[in-house]
View 1 (tube, rainbow, N blue to C red):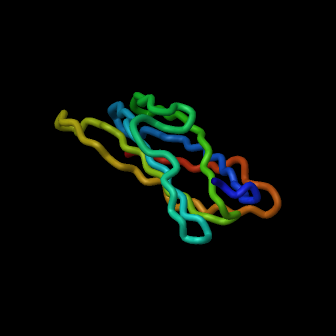
View 2: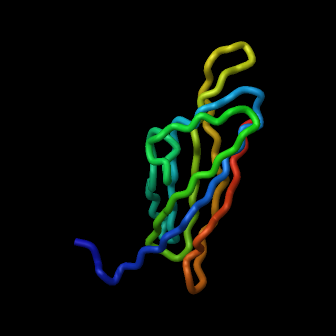
Length: 126
């Protein structure tokens, strides 16, 4: 049974993924983890596809193109850290397929009064 007095802090993320490569790539998996101020680690999202608003859908990203994805993370404390990663499938110049995990840098989450409603971070694949 959950404590009705327990607070939940919600954090919106807004990620833009850029493909600076000469060839298309496909975003095939995602992972988001938070670590709250009490040291509790929580896997927020993980699995196939882009996650967030796209859920388990993969996304083909042509060379030189970009797209955005948005989602929500939650924590039990008003300060926390978030870590994200996207797995992309791309072709090498030799024509073979390769999977690359691109990490989103550590995001510091902190509330003074109201939760932050729009975190913007960019991931670029080169």
